[in-house]
Amino acid sequence: MSSGGTEDGMSQEGITPFLRVLRLILHSFLRQRMAWPGQRPEDMDIAFDIEAMAGTVGLSTGDMAAALDQLTGGGLIFWQNGVLRVMDPDGLVDAARVDPAQLSDWLSN
Image (spheres, rainbow, N blue to C red):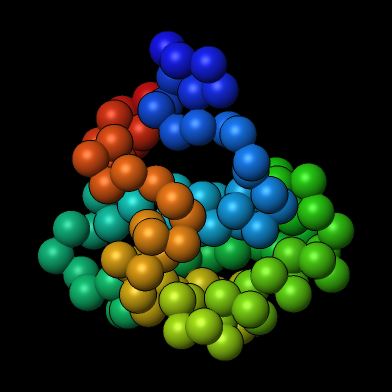
């Protein structure tokens, strides 16, 4: 493992709270996608408890809501009343700065 890397192959250098939110959403989406492989991404509702998720990434619920609103405004996700949908999976991968080739390794951990 190189300096600044993790076992899952994603660098932890320069990880901002916003980037942690992106990666949390991406991870949740990919897990859901594995469970329902034939479903269109924009039709996949992901239950999203904002308080629990904010705690997971070390944010207040207000900051988490602001991040979700920003992602919604950017067209990457739809988020409302505890339901999250990824509207642009490729855009989410790009925004989360994750190497697509490493996603399968990430999910197997």
